[in-house]
Image 1 (cartoon, rainbow, N blue to C red):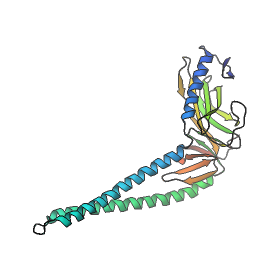
Image 2 (tube, rainbow, N blue to C red):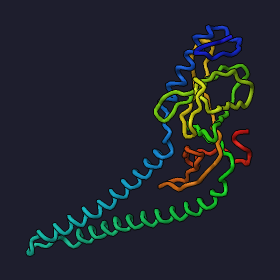
Image 3 (cartoon, rainbow, N blue to C red):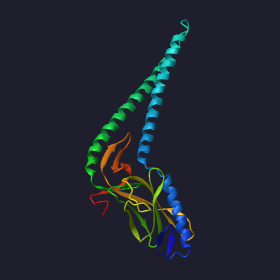
Image 4 (cartoon, one colour):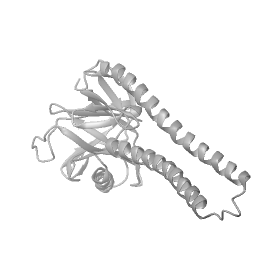
Length: 257
């Protein structure tokens, strides 16, 4: 019998069970605390900022070129005008910069139109269940779940933290072979009911030597909305917002089942 922090489970692991579980929970709690519930929003903001910065730089080059050109014309010696070949080259460079700015603007509009069309199609997924590769766990109607694959007998730890970085739930389970589903009833370690919303989750395992490692997992949730960001489509699962690109599967099966 392995026990730590009030958690217990049966295992055949030959090393100190208490030490292994303590190391496992310390690792999962640290990862959960440092996880970000605004991951999708941050990714959208970063992408949008990068795009805006690139466009601003290109537009800035155009303005700088015009300033240099007019300054050159203003201060040239009338008796020794600038070489016409140089002027032609400079005008050609200006035309290229201006064309690049216009091309970027047109591409942005085209992407926006395509995203609008995709958004209309994706809205049909509202009400369905999504399996998403993210560390944001949606608590909806007092329940949440995630899935991971493991071999039989692995010790797996799960920690959940709220938006303030406080760990509210710890659990240790012994896995079965294949796909495992972990469910949370929305209650914290003290039995208090937590509010629906987005939580940060971490899943790890520990070997016989006490070394912890990450476990790949997907969170499950009911899609409650679809929205368009600056550079991506996002799905809403209650209070959680994640990029459409992170969605692994969508089905009509209830996330709570």
